[in-house]
Image (cartoon, rainbow, N blue to C red; front, side, top):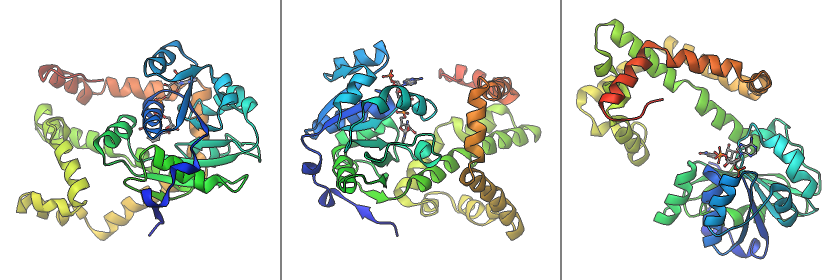
Length: 329
Ligand code: NDP
């Protein structure tokens, strides 16, 4: 088992008195800023855009241009999208750093793949919530908190681990617990979860069901559109991945537990596909491909978006969602 840390292991005194800078007032930035202010810390916001700056000022935060906030902050939470982070770091944050400052990342990506290589005299830590931004705020307000993966990448002055735990407490994460991880592990599990193919598995299932003569509506309602998956997702959380099967019919339980497993050789073939995904993350192939796609004006992404938008099932989905009074992409 990994090492876990809770409120009892983390003291707010380890970070009190520091100026905490939030860079990127978006999904994570706003929620983490509000949580840390509620915990009594001195939080300022660095923002490049008028819209975000207005929002953070409306929320009562001192809000400065990125470079000015970087000079003022002792602890810098870098909460902009991973793909723009290296440029923002180089241009606006790095020039304002001083020895003993602490950089906090919510994802391992840019440090693990060395797109950002901080100077040796700053602390570099990770607090990566396993929770969407709004949930970071809502779960803390509700009193439960949320788990995070945490790690120290660079301990410049001996304070990195305590700072990491103090900040984890301030954002509300040690309430549920944080686990000791690494920038590499966070990168692997995060990218793997995005890439292991759940959406395309459902899309293929829709194709097969309609080929078999089922209506697109019946197929989509069964596979996700009714909202039942939201309920079942909550059962996974509450009762465990297979423990939740006791809430289904016996036929469903047999189908999911036994029949869906397939033959050992099928299972091994699928695991080999999954192993290849891990390998492409680990050896940097995915990161190189993604960097190239961005450098080429996101052409590959735009083509895929267009293809999926025109896919017969997604055309059917738009009709269904119109009928249900919902939005669809
Ligand atoms: P967002 O997409 O919400 O963006 C955050 C902010 O970044 C924006 O509000 C904007 O702020 C700024 N920004 C966006 N584009 C640019 C740009 N081109 N140049 C400069 N600033 C820009 O980010 P998230 O909160 O989703 O992600 C932040 C970090 O948290 C990432 O490392 C991500 O991997 C990690 N994370 C995200 C999770 C999530 O659920 N979203 C979960 C766990 C970790 P402004 O207008 O002030 O410049």
